[in-house]
Structures are given as structure tokens and as C-alpha cells.
Image 1 (cartoon, rainbow, N blue to C red):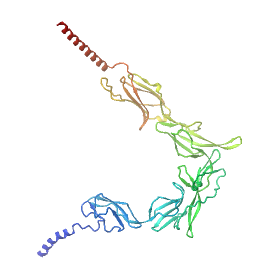
Image 2 (tube, rainbow, N blue to C red):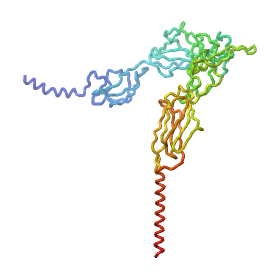
Image 3 (tube, rainbow, N blue to C red):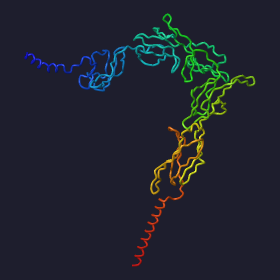
Image 4 (cartoon, helix red, strand yellow):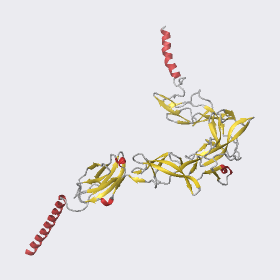
Length: 458
């Protein structure tokens, strides 16, 4: 029995030394040495690593690729630390992918990639940029694609899809619409049309485009339908589900370029309300306007005249007879400045009392002064109330620069100006230095006189 215990004691350190450095069977790429990661043997064998090494340092990134028609689930992995362990931040795999089909050269793919993963959807269009789509397809496997029909079902794609230049028949929309075709050299662009209406009326879509759209697969061949698309106010193309009509409405008002409209459109419907705003420190006379039209008979010429209403401070809608502009909220008349050697006064007027709540004026020393006339800091702050008033900053030092600001909380500056007080009167400190200077000059002259007298008396 003693011999068995002795053998066990001798074999234990030998077995430990033999197993040292062997990985734990379920560590999924954890390091064999402190701070390093290895590639687990149970990962996808199609994976390829760049750079290719037996182990990788902590925080080192490795680029992934796959053999053949496969693509990695993530492009990069990194060796990271989690507590006392080091491990990979991802468990990558290789997935099947499809190469972009080489069909009609006029087809545009969005997104435009060389390869696509399985089930990744791709939009096909016969127009550049944000144009109407021809169809939506997806990668089924490395050799097959599927196409989405108008009912929302996926079908195996026919041999190929192509763009067609066939024109759409003229639509039977509002009889008052006038259609002007844009004559350009590109055959595809001849399908873009500009629509106009009689005076006072606006088309629901000022620009439309005819496009062929995939509908379904019959007997292994794609079937297309004619579809009309209209350009929305944001510039994007929207499929037209109904008729395009001439509607009573207003064009975007050509007022102050600083005005911000919400919503910001090219055309507005009758009774549509629009909010107006301006940059900080400015405000429009009307913050809400409304589009209106009225029938007009001008010597036998019938039509609609557009005009705008504005909501006044009492909430009533009143006609707008002139351009709406961005007006300064606070007016300070420079001609009314009163500047003396010890004070600054200015008159202010708030054009929009509701917008001046919490207005505050401050007066501060603009720059540090220097001897012999050092100016003291001034702490003049005043809340401004009402529609008009006078702000006074005093007492101040003569011939000193001060800044006066009027602002609204939290950080809107309505007025800012630099003032220099007048140079009138001398302060006690200034006379002190002048007297000292005169005394020094007088003593200097007396010393010179005494020296001359002593020289001549000899």
C-alpha cells in the first residue's frame, strides 16, 4: 500500500507537466499562453485568416475571408480580454453568397455590390439616382435569385430582367392638366413630364414619370405593367395610386429668404396651415399662415387667385397684403445713445412683447485698465420689462471701454455694443500723479539752480 502511494506521488507532477499547455476542450479559441488567442479547431473550415499565425496577441484584429462562393459573417474578429480569460469577440462562419447578375447594362442595383448574402434584398431600377424601381430581388442561393411580385410573394426569377423603352399611354387624369414633355437627348428621360394647371390651380404632382414595373411571372417569363410615379415635395419619387388633379392651392411664397416654413413644400393645398420662424433674434410678423384661393372672373377669363392669411396676436385670420419678413425682436436706436464720462444710457424697444419675456441687460468692463488710472469692475445688470424703456449703466470711469449686452435666456443675444466713456474731468488718482510730476519737475529745477549758483559764487 505504501508502494502505491509512493508511485502516485511520483506520477502526479509528471502528468501535470505532460498536460500543461493543452487547451481546455471547450474554450472556443482561448489562449494557450497568457494574453494570446488561438483559432479553435471546431470553427468553419472554409474560413481564412489574415495574417495567418498559430496564435494572436491580445487586442489584435484579424481579417476574415472564405473560400469559393462563400463570404464571412463578419469581416473582422479581435482577440479580447474578459476577466481572467482571453477570447475572440465573435464566432464567425462562412455563408453562401450570390454574384451580381450580369443582365441588362441599363439596370442599376441598390445597394450596388459585387456579392450579396443569402436573403439580402436588392432594388433594381432602370433610372439613376432615386428613381422608380423595376423590381425587388433577393439572393436565394449561390446560383438562383428570387423576385417579389406586387402581392408580396417571392418567386424564382426568370432567366433575367431587362429595361424596356416602351412608352406608357397618356393617362386619363384631370382634363385641366397640361402636360409638357421635357425634350432631352436621353430616351429614358423623355418619360419625365412636367404638369401645369390653369391660373390659381396647382397639380397634385408637378412632375411625373412613366416606368415599367415587374408584376408577376407567367410561363417562366416576367410580366411588366405601366406605372406612373410623381416627385414628392422632398424630391423623392412616389408611386401614384390614383389620379393627378388640378387643385386649389398656393405656391411657396417668395418672401424673406431667412424665413423657415414648416412644412417646407413647393405647393400647398387650400386651407393648409404653415408655421413660420426666423433665425435667433428675429421673428416674423405672422408665425402661422394659411393658403386660400378665390374664384376670379377677369373680363371673361375664369380662374382662381391664390392669397395667404396670417393669424394675428388675437388669433384672428387676416389677409397678408405684403411680404412677410424676419424682423429684429429688439430695436435699439443708435441716435439716442447718451454717453458721458460716468454713465451710458440707451433706449430700447421690443417689437414683439411676447418674445421679450425674461430680457436682461448687462454692462461690463470691456478690457482691463492699466495704471495710473485703473478702472474698477462694474456690475450693472437689469431685467427689462414692458415694450420699451431706458437702460442706464453707471457709475463708470472716464475714457474707459465698456460692453453692453441685452439677451434672452438661455443664450440668445439681441444686442451687443462697445462704448467708450468721454474724457471729461480728472479723477483724484489722476491729480495725484500730476501733482507728483510737478513736484519732481520743480525739485529738479531747484537743484540745477543751486548747482549753478555755487559754481558762479566761486
